[in-house]
Length: 389
Image (cartoon, rainbow, N blue to C red; front, side, top):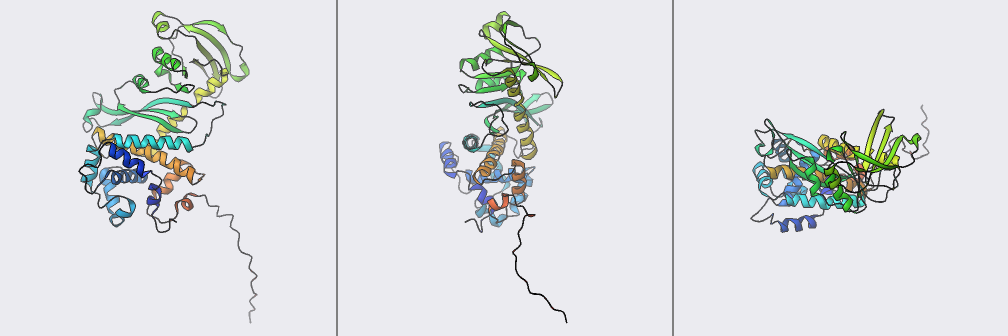
């Protein structure tokens, strides 16, 4: 079916164009546009992410080398440096944001649970942020410090599916804790937070939404024990206490009971203390649940290394957000393609294969399927003997 069709065109077929067109109509993205539509812009940005282009000039050189293929690749009649940069500067970034969230929902729906050992039916989320450094003289609007600029990527990461559930892009000067006010908490869900997010008023908001949190304690924690649970010290649990916070303001912000767990980790030879509002899970399960927070750290590391969100092709806030959401679109697209084609490869391997094969005409399933060249069965032909005279 895909014979004669470029790999890149096969790949963009997995993007729901009708959904994208509805979002474009919502924000009048194609108003007064004759040739270079929002879909052409999306295809250009996805191409730049897949091929790892470092700059706008680098992207345009790569595109212009295949100018005769523009129509078949979905780039439209023509792509120039000026129309792409103007589109990134002027067209509403919310088009890409909403489309990214649509793909996030689809990717979370089709992705299976991997590397999660706890028997928890509810969703488990890890929330953290990562700063992307920017040159202050170029990105003047992203002032962070006197001589430094940057934006901050606040991410609510679905631990079970390894897909980000929510992406918030702010200036780097915005405190991490303020991003918690923008989240919508899911009843019964688990939220794993670093101790930098320890704010009892905000933690109590999670409790009021019938959700659970797990975080590490700060050194200045004032906790009054009411009673202790029996612990199994062979699991590394040193203590499991139920109590309340001490201090006038702390008790005003969080008046309910809390659970404090002290845990010894043999791998790092360190003792950790956690607080949580969950009283049903075992103490060692709470400690193991917090360990899954490293998944969001790996997500930040992976997306910075393999997609382009550290060097930008535009300097305006709108252009920066469009490029970041384009990277999220590619991340979710890889997950959707892997599920639909039943590909047993890591996202890194899929990206590496696609980056050097976008202009091939091989069926994409054949391209991404693991081939075992060692297990080739030769046909057993009965050959005639050659008699030498």
